[in-house]
Length: 413
Ligand code: GLY
Image 1 (cartoon, rainbow, N blue to C red):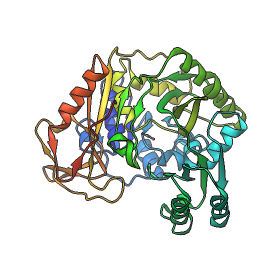
Image 2 (cartoon, protein in one colour; image 1 turned 90 degrees about the vertical axis):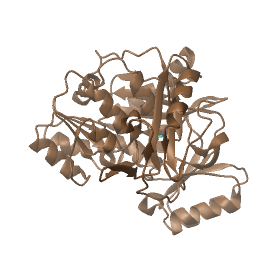
Image 3 (cartoon, rainbow, N blue to C red; image 1 turned 135 degrees about the horizontal axis):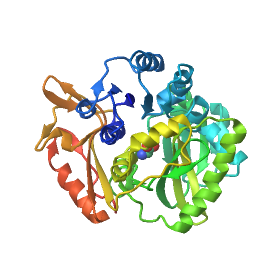
């Protein structure tokens, strides 16, 4: 089977490593890839847009497109590829809208009675301003409606800060069109859990739950990021909780997909808050999590490519995932300034093979590997215990350095 992998981050490097293990793999291409992926697949030099992707797939007898990031899915990659008969692991444009529009996602949750925090949608600055003026209780969460690469969520502690955020989002358009519309929702208290499911829209196969650490600094201080580290399986998952999530969220979402006529073949990422009132949805994403993938996928014993192909073809009722009996941990090594502005092109010094790391934001500069993103490398390790996996991941993190490198020291705590 010839496979084209879309994406160039740590999530895609991890998926690439796992796909490479499959006996069913024929030719393996990636757009745009990164140095880690280049070590595994043939990296194709073309602009990342959905027409180029589908043209390349058609011209190179690609049997399956695996899409890592959300953007091409939100733009309709699956729908376009379907016109040429190429299966995609990743939902249709309608399905990806669950992530692409926070307002739409909340409307679906309200319509199908899926537990989430109370919220209001705003389409103009004046209405948001008037709402904030009357709002008495804080903190609140302000979210940009559109995609924002992990930068569209602000937890706000008081009215003054709320005014600043809505001005920057809706008037100054800090996130472009993505922040023209917003939602304001109640802040939920509890522990976070990322519960991911592989689904063909009818059958939902749970992946091991992971714990992501979204704040940039230790003790959950600083800005929200895409994720600074992770471990799996999550400590707090129990049989009862799994059942609660499946009854109160997954079952209802399955009905929503059917009733709304949504073609969904890929991963459904359910970001959860485990509150005193039960598990509530923080967000739906239409793809694997990053860095959750870095800890979930290495724990899969069975053939992921086989499962992805069956998913894209729309039939997984006969599929099962075999898991390793281990824990996995991931420490994200980031560049100073992230999640705000940061420098790129800084030389990375490895004290071990560069390919002992998962590459997230790197590129080649001649023979050197240099930084090319805010989240640069991931130190990932497996162990027979959570502590063991974390110890190994932190040991690995010490084997790399670059000017501006930093990482959280409290992943797993
Ligand atoms: N780690 C959060 C996400 O992938 O959305």
